[in-house]
Amino acid sequence: MNQRHALKLFNFSKNYYSNVATKTLKDFMPSTIGDIPTSPSVTYIQDIISPLQRKVYIETYGCQMNVNDTEIVLSILQKFNYVRTVKTDDADVALLMTCAIRDQAENRVWERLHSLKHQKPQMKIAVLGCMAERLKSQLLEKKKLVDVVCGPDAYRDLPRLLEDMDLYGKQGMNVMLSLEETYADLKPVRFDEKSPKAFVSIMRGCDNMCSYCIVPFTRGRERSRDMESIIDEVGFLVDKGVKEITLLGQNVNSYRDVSNDSEENINGETQLSKGFSTIYKPK
Image 1 (cartoon, rainbow, N blue to C red):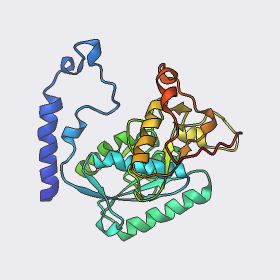
Image 2: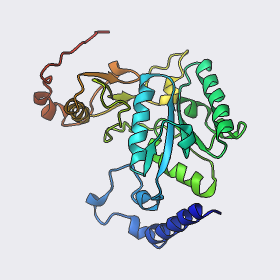
Image 3: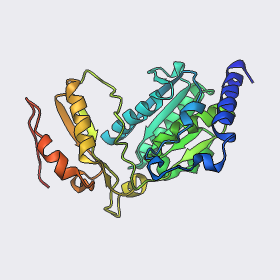
Image 4: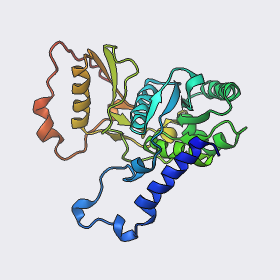
């Protein structure tokens, strides 16, 4: 075990025993109803993740939704001391955001996995997105090219999966689909901050079980973000100088805000910013 891994294991063990192992079940139970956590994140994960900075290389395949998901993943990883690099030679981890809509899309990913493993055998590789959801453990088993598999609704768990891989050499997988996850609380890290265009995801999933389409099985059931979070993100982008915003979703025509206070609190605050126009194409 080299010095870097020994230090990381020591820090992990120290934080684990101080934050988790010494506690009883009572310590994790809320003292009152108001103490029940609403965040999907594990409360102590920030404390046990290594403080060492790591570099991540990312490739994105497929639709614009995958591009948006890649930006979401970056925003999550940045909180855990990962920085993006555009060179595989500098990377500790390579992430492939994948598409499974056609065989050709998956074949391209398999070819790239072989290339990355040959180019830098010691680099850890994670497959994200629709191909991860469709193939699941097959990705871990086939030719041992992949270290981590993470589905579209499990990106918050990616730092833990990568940490387990880094510390223990343990392959990891989380492909659980969610009925609620929209990542509405996250501000995606934009690849090109100078671009006047941006994309905002307003819903995820699809309930239209078309016989020819795999999307409902790789993206899960439909769920929409609350309108307030969408307007907040759009306002954030406008303040950054964005002039054109496209709303994204697997099936945007199915968008609906089911929050109780959406109409009462939002309707009077949704005027277009100065200089903006709306292009609406009815179905």
